Amino acid sequence: MTTDQSLATSWRKRLWRNLGALGFLLIVGALVGLFLHGYFDTRRRERLFEQVVQSLRKSAYAPGIYRDVELPKPLRQASWDGTVTLRVTDDGRYIVLFKEKVGWKMNYSGSVYSDAPLRAEDIGSSNSGRRVIGLGDNESPFVSSQLNSRWYLVFFDLG
Image (cartoon, rainbow, N blue to C red; front, side, top):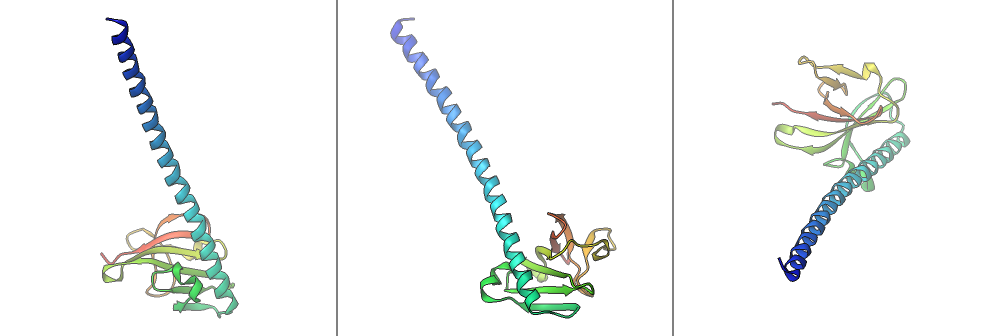
């Protein structure tokens, strides 16, 4: 092999090695970006839910269940139609259901957010053994995951 051939071969090897490193860095950067976007989106949603709860508290609802409570205009983005279901407990806690995506047969996914940690008596189980959050006679969404003691991701599906 001549000197010119060995230089060309080593140049190609360096190029492929550098391209491989660049590709790896691009993939890692994209994954970090997705993680950070999810983290900041979660924090933004939690702040929005907290603002909704504080706004509802100003109205001083009596204990009970309130369906289709219309949110103030700047907070309507918290749910799919600008309304929420509100449960005010006897001890004054506000538990709010945010329907974020609604589909066929009014099935939905969303969040339940409270101004205080939910208690064991707030969470029951369905006939199938799934955890549900009781928000009245006909409103008991299934729990898909718990993000913290005040925020649950929920869904309802008639099947």
